Length: 229
Image 1 (cartoon, rainbow, N blue to C red):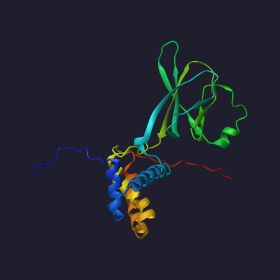
Image 2 (cartoon, rainbow, N blue to C red; image 1 turned 30 degrees about the vertical axis):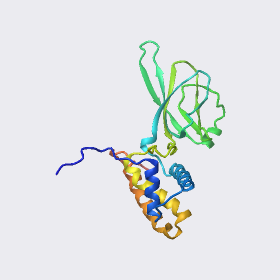
Image 3 (cartoon, helix red, strand yellow; image 1 turned 60 degrees about the vertical axis):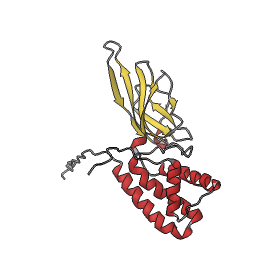
Image 4 (cartoon, helix red, strand yellow; image 1 turned 180 degrees about the vertical axis):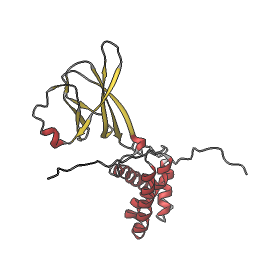
């Protein structure tokens, strides 16, 4: 038996909306219904920003460092910074070395007595405003600290036009449609809210569990020897 030989299945925004309405028992939609459903879809994408790290939205950013400058602005689509390191260049050999930085919270950063102290950066603090910023400690003191490199979580792109496709990998298509159907049921099919919510949460949980890195984890016990009296 022949197979299609393709793995390119995807859904346009209007297909997503149509499928979601059908799950609500609605087949004929008007112009306002389309606008309402697209708004609900964008709200769904925003809610996914509270569902942990989505690996397909993790991006590596390179920021040129300036001696004496502590704080740097992240891209406008940044949700949070996950990991960061500083690249240093050896003036003699021209070789580059990456130095990992430790992420600290607001309280730890506020407790630093001299935030403008210069030297080799070892820590960073992310101020999660509408556009997050990164503050380094220590402040770079020389041009040998050439770049700050960090992995940040991008926001999911808006739905946009009805002929667009979504900014999602294929494995998230089922839970996206289920999620939109659940959102629409709150407005158009209240009798189906509970059933559609259960289906949505179940499919989203499977997608989030799949969206991980398959690596080994090793845990070693720490030996402790107490004082003997």
